[in-house]
Length: 454
Image (cartoon, rainbow, N blue to C red; front, side, top):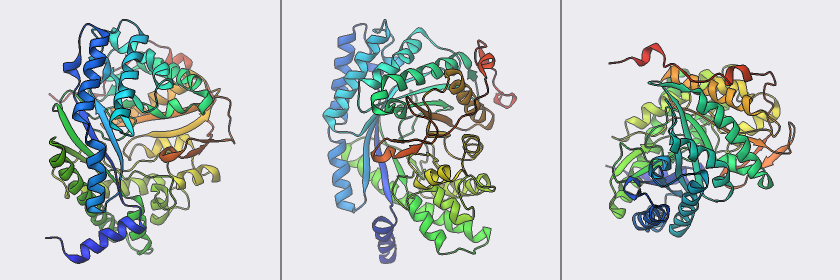
């Protein structure tokens, strides 16, 4: 039973501590839209999305009004488009036509983002996969809400270094294609290892082939809530610290569970998972870096940061798992630089570098996220960064990702403004030493020994 004090506590979390449901994401299977004819495929895609998701935004807003819980984003994830367009796309421009269709469908139903302009190439690339990947720069330049992701590795298959090399080039091309908007296209593109099939968060969301025809996944968020409760116990020992985070994560996740079940009922679509990630925003006080400061480090990046983040991530998972029968997606703590005011301050103070962020990704949810770098960064350097992150994910059996933005025309010391939830970011320096001989080797890095489970 929910008592009055719990209701009042939740209200306080919402009003004063930035608690929100970050997204209701409807996953939609588009495999049955495939055909040998591009216009037919596009029409089927448009019809299916606008039929299944026609009430998604309205019901999300109604739930927010009825329960007094902010539901910030309404989103759609779809089957990786390289699987849907394989029979009708003969060149990259054909895939761009599908991207235009997705953009129109997403705008017709009013969602904030649509994810799934994607390819899964962890072991090898089909011709269709390569066509889609080469279409990404133009597709992201010519659409507004379409997000793209490419999975280049996994613990079971190793790392496809041919795809890693290609993605370094594609990221630079995307930056160039959107340079008039400070290379914003790269903010809608992520390269993953061990990508989950049910992630509700952008830009890496897609609807995996193991999923039902349609599903509702919900991502919750509450860094501000965790920060507030830790501020009340500044001198606690580790046991009390962990218990406090765990109990808070439980309460946050229960809010998400309520919204997910209600959205599922009202939309007539099965409930999939709760992603209980702590996802920050540029708002003051809604920062994962500020939580690390409460735990005891002066700035994110100071000695002890990785250990503090490991503690935070583990307790969030332990508390959240008890609050929902179906926890999935990424579930942990995000550390995007441009979307987290505390991370931005840490970079500006000189406490946080790309290398330290890479170390932190060993223990958090994703990886190098929303990092702005100089526009003259070489494609092979970007590929090397992707390979490093993929290796962390492959060996540690976890999801890692790179969402890096080479801002054309800007360099270290300058700032780039993305707006909205994407925030702003200082341009961070990258290691200038060359890795091209490594990146240009062909083939794939084999799976680690612990991948052989059968």
